[in-house]
Image (cartoon, rainbow, N blue to C red; front, side, top):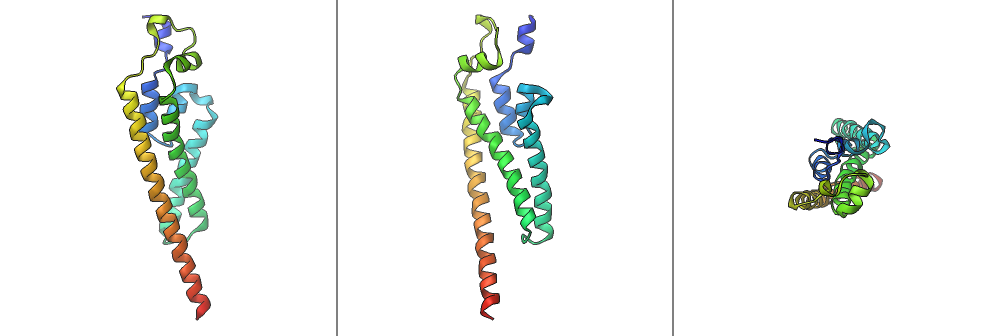
Length: 154
């Protein structure tokens, strides 16, 4: 087994990490190691999202900083699924040129149906979570507007 095979970056593993561990940055860490700026950004934003969720629960969903931090966590999760879609649909030749330079012709990447399935599930989960987040955020916004209008009318 050559050194090239051990260093080869798998598109399936990258997509699986992005699908099953969204927002953790594990997929970016896989490609670039601990020096990955985007992986650390995602991880920090996800942590902020958890802190924001705690603030919102304690304040019965009436915390501005909680909503901002939760939004950062939401963006981290969505960004992970979006990168899964983007890199999963990238042609194998372009993937190998960027992440597996110098790999022999016989060892080139060959994406299969599993990569496509991770892309499909990332799209479904990403769209579902985005619609849910937006629905809850708008609901809370309009509830707060109604409460302020009632205070003014009294």
